[in-house]
Image 1 (tube, rainbow, N blue to C red):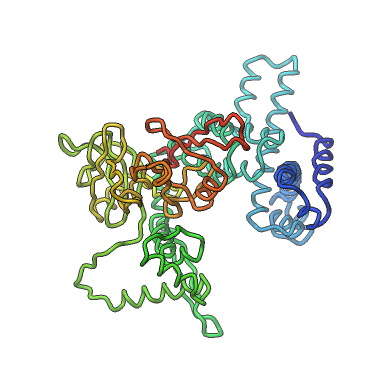
Image 2: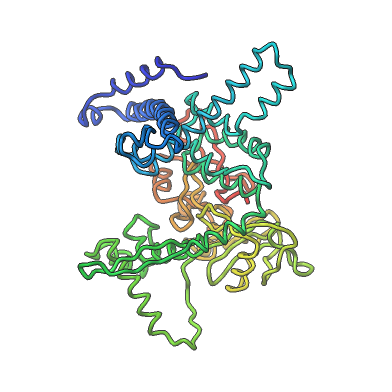
Length: 504
């Protein structure tokens, strides 16, 4: 149902009762802090809805055809977004988002009123009413969810921009069907997660257009290096997802000890991490120095020599559809070695040792990046870097190494990254590079094994939460479940922990 003024007053009154200073909030017990956060979010959602309505009104009264008589022009602004940004003190992106969502809501409301008028009119037959209803924008359910207070403006914009617009390949009917599923799942997701899910749905609907969008992203790349008046040099750039993830991985490997990355257990790595943490330079200065050093190394390199060694890990996940059998006994599914690319072979088989082109359109994904890559890019990456196989048993688990060693090996951790897709904890989006290998059955306490099936990836905060607050993870076959402690849930209801790999 549509929210009313009473709903807004109730929400703001609840927030007002929390207190009027930092000291008041600090005095709240943990339970009231969490409840208060939800109350503030509810009140903000109602206010944001009204902000979107107002932004749509300002945009309509500032239409280009009104010229200098438009509302924004009268106030000395070139656009309604500029007027909104100045008055609210928000970012340009926030102003554009309010106008986009508000306009979508206004269009949907106007179309639905036309349908209501047609239904109430005695002069209009059923066929005419159906014709009116067909003209209601496919985004109407998004607008209704925002109006009803069940969807935030941020999430609405994520859905709107993620699903995209109608075109020859993706009809309004297809988008409407995807939207039904998306709105159900959006209730438990944040705006970033909603956008990733919406974008994946769009890519599944328009798989043939992935290559074109990928080319556009590549064409948009740039790097500007220029000297400022004071002699300093500034860099400003934009990279396509494939190259950008490699750049991010490089700088992650350089600066992760300074940014709360994975804890190191190897003595040499731990010593290096300690030196990084004690370095007097800022994290940004370390990153800048690393770039200069990389350029120096490249400039001094022997152009006739092929360099080996470990490259920053950027994994590419592919669907079974993207890889076809090359010869009898060799199934689809590969993992990269030089660049850390990875896929997963069928149960009981080893991955094949070379790239094989697919017979039909398909796509993959760079791990940690929501933008898909085309079949052509998959083939090129696999051809460029070489491949290696990961042997799995008939249940789909990578072969175990038992209790011969306490810690998971680098190969096992890489395999976990492919299987888990990052931290398995509910609603966590940390990538494998920021996760730690957790023994489901602890090594000492439970005589646990260092086996892939009995290990899962958890980010450092959730790994700490699990041990400190006595949560536990159990496995049934290939499924993993989170069991809360009794003080959190007396029934200890199991929570499913599916893989975070994109549903390609």
